[in-house]
Length: 470
Image (cartoon, rainbow, N blue to C red):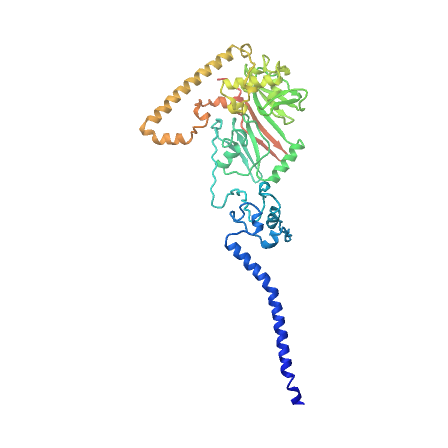
């Protein structure tokens, strides 16, 4: 049996070897075609010959650094490649579409592959190491040098005797010359809450709360009319001896200028007046306002024909010949405001109206006041004041030039230059300091009382019986 098998065993081994050789030949033949194609494409690219897809695609593709298509053979045949998810069909689509366009109709498409998009510049933000500085140049109107006296102080309130010409809190052109700022700087009293306010030209009792809870409690008493205020003033002429009650409504003419008048369209208010003394020219009157309207006492006294003796607003010739007595004002509100501004501009006392030259609009500078209304005495006063100011300006200018030329005053000149801004128009104006009596109006808050408290201030000098006009 073994001997019989010897002849077919070599035949079987030879047949298996032939089958394996045939299978390997078929596999190599199938791979040989693509490998030769790829090798020929690489040779063309190396020799500088572009594939058909690049010749028909965007002009200057390689010159601009555009990436050649992944499959140049397919793109050259015009086959459209689908983009991957989340990608715009821009790269190969451009090449495929460009193959169908003639050279004269090709155009560059935006957003192609490898196109650089420059983001907008980011805004610079202040960092931890940045230093910012803001310099404020301010001209504050002059105020009296009279000190602010403390009348009372406890854990709840601070009561002071406010001088005239000093505002209660920062407003308009005032910052440092305010009661709030002075109390903080000179008496270390900070975070105060004003319980009521006085006009800048009014002096007398002024209360502040130290906490917000105390402020709210007293304001509730104000709303419930549980507080009483008494003022004293010196008015023009002989005031009636009997008690007088005025209930005329008051209307605000201008919030900017700060002017009010009696008008039927105004808010209701009531003031009780009682004469204290009369010296033959003027009267001292006690006033009890039952409401709290702006300029209530001053407007009611003007209506009664007895304005405050030195009131710069409501005892002015701008109100007409009768000075607003009985509410008779032969002018419109616009004409009244223009005349008031013109009068104080001529006297260089616009700060009385809380105005400066820069606040004046064309409508406020065209005055309609006539020389007949101003009167001879007023015109002479204005002319004398103007001449006086011109002399002061010329003398002051000479003094400044002398100081600048003097070698021994170098330190003073440096200090002066620090306070002068060459771009500021007011720095070039030299004004005369007002007299002390020019900063005082004869209206004083004498008493302020409520449930559980009562505060008085001394009677001012001008309210004494023996006071005489200077």
